[in-house]
Length: 498
Ligand code: NAP
Ligand code: MG
Image (cartoon, rainbow, N blue to C red; front, top):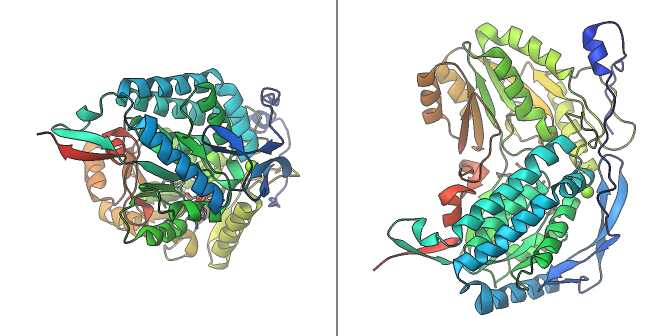
């Protein structure tokens, strides 16, 4: 557990201090009932792993066990792929698109109906603030299902002049930072296009995926259309290397992405990879200051920095750098770190002890490399895994903290003089997922957008997502897109209309 060693914040007569005294508003957990044992979803039924193995999922805010989950092995992956193949051949591929759409619309509506339950469960299992699961993860997941349901009967219109057909059985592997949302990004286009799916969610955050699996049963999906094989990294590796699938769609770390790329090399299996990032904010001297401060704060402290497209590097123009960093320090002193179920919480729990250790190691490494580390005085909860929002200054660019993905609430700061210098610094990474530009000048925005090597560039905003808009990376952030027509095409074969 990482505790900030500065003095805990106390109430006082100063308005800023009084602001810190707020009445907790804890979302009730009564709405969720977590089953103590959870099986795999194979061919429409909940089953134990063939060898009976299980693993435990824990609550990051307390460190306590929540449930036992089946640990899928190769035999289970075999069974799931066989079920998906059978469902593909016998029902899903040839079902009229309008009918497939009905299943997806039903699933989206059921998710909306039970949105609060999903939000609370996501927060309990993953540690993210309830405000985010409630306002971002779950509504966006439903939006992805609705959007793609609408495509199911219009696939021949996706690319003019081309007839579209599904690929077959898709193996999908998702990470823990946006558990249900990443699942929705994956299954919605795959199923809408007429493919069937074997899904492997992240080990620490399987519960909302399993609940969504239960909703596919309530929505009476044909058995085998969506199969869920929970488990560890080996389960994912078995799925990715399985000879019976037609495509792997993976979201996760660059390291695992590379191993999957090796596993499918030389086979006809299609692959899309959504990997890590080291996003830069470029704040120019003419930027709207309040807006930029909020954007930068949101871009890295949102979801504890467990965001692939997080703006983890601030590049600020020299003339405003000192004032900007002062204001940032002040602003992060007002972030509320603590119980993720408290509706006032800005920064929740770190997803796992391992992830917290990784973040602490990165920050310690930055100190050792001579950087200056700032953390506002704030008392972290006594139990669970928490990390104070952190700003690292005195960064040259060659330090590990400036180059590697931290995946935590840690922002590095560098300055620049000219636009060219800003772009060179922003591009000085092996990643290429996201970037943010803050300036009032339109021509500057266009110039930056053309010169930044990133899949997504936001201007005067950050972390905005929409199912109609493609998302994905370049370089070591992966390839392939999710969302929009581009994302849809990743799940189709296209042939010219004769
Ligand atoms: P991870 O360790 O790569 O795991 C991702 C998924 O792959 C998990 O389900 C994991 O299972 C599984 N896995 C682990 N080893 C595997 C192997 N050898 N073969 C196949 N699957 C394997 O990543 P993470 O720590 O969960 O997620 C954080 C990373 O995801 C960050 O780097 C972040 O940037 C990236 N991310 C990218 C995007 C994007 O759209 N570009 C979006 C979200 C996250 P276990 O959970 O059991 O280990
Ligand atoms: Mg958990």
